[in-house]
Length: 105
Image 1: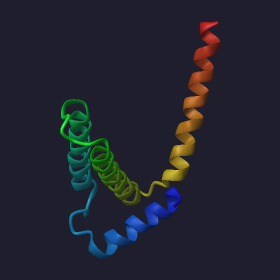
Image 2 (image 1 turned 45 degrees about the vertical axis):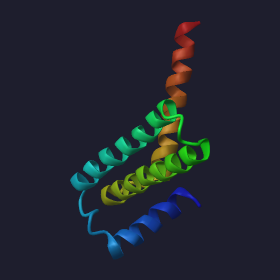
Image 3 (image 1 turned 180 degrees about the vertical axis):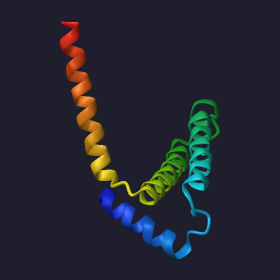
């Protein structure tokens, strides 16, 4: 599935069911909550020997997907094409890395 397909899927679902995802401020609060849940799973990975690696991987996957869902919702609400934004981000990082290497030599 492409990033654009994810955005389309999230947009279709939110259009049909998205009572909780009504505006950017609400989604920012939901994103904060989801990142916190992801942090909790990561903390358990390093502190709870009772959880199996498979259980941790599944829990982490679910939380990462939740974060991705809310990010797609925010992008859709803001009119952002995530594919283009990520490509722009990668190009900026490459320029910065390239400039940094030139100054250190």
